[in-house]
Amino acid sequence: MKDPKRQLVAAAAVLGVVAGACAGYLVQAGREPRLPLLVQPALPQARGPQPEPLTAEQDRKVRNDGDLRELLLEKPGGATTPDWVAPQGWMNLGEYADMSDEPETYYDRLEKQEFLRAAVTGWDTGSHQVEIWLAQFEQLEAPTAPADDSSSSRYWAETDPDVQSRQIPGTGAGRAYVHPEPSAESTALPGVSAEAHAFRGDLSLHIWVYGDDPLPMGTIMDLAERQMERL
Picture 1 (cartoon, rainbow, N blue to C red):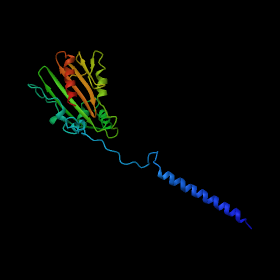
Picture 2 (cartoon, one colour):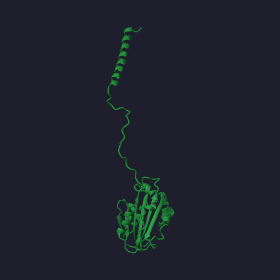
Picture 3 (tube, helix red, strand yellow):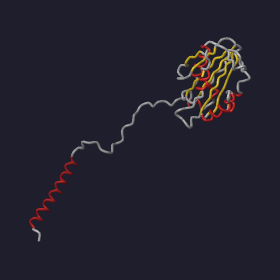
């Protein structure tokens, strides 16, 4: 048989613990919290004027998705349009690849690079001829690393041991080249030549200038810089 006194003492001890715990909770509940609550009230939002959205002229993506021909340099006054300029100023993949010495190989390469379209223009001033290509790539497979077909053009330009070159400002790897001697490989366009190749975003730029007299570096650089400014 259990001792009644011990039972009373044990019960009193339990009640004392419970009462102490309750008192502690009541004291804590009545105090100001020192730590931040887990659920914070909504923070005030920043106020003031918001930045204006880019205009079509400032937004490169909007410009590039429009009529690429509008980004090309305009034919200077008094110049004529040669027959070799593509009709309506457009080139599709096949036409673009046909301009290469190895059309089939270049066609396959352009397909892998996600070639989309090309806008072209050109003119004849009487003293020299100018041809400009602006090729666009889709950037679906590699949106952060757009294809750039200007690198191969720069490579071939630099195979000329006499070539003079200069970087095009603001284009990274873009360069302009002057060939002081006529090309022994080209019979279609005799004479001296200059060229420029660069890229920006999803666009690759190619410019060629042909003439009978030596072409100064300033001629091709002026064309390249003005064309890049329009991009």
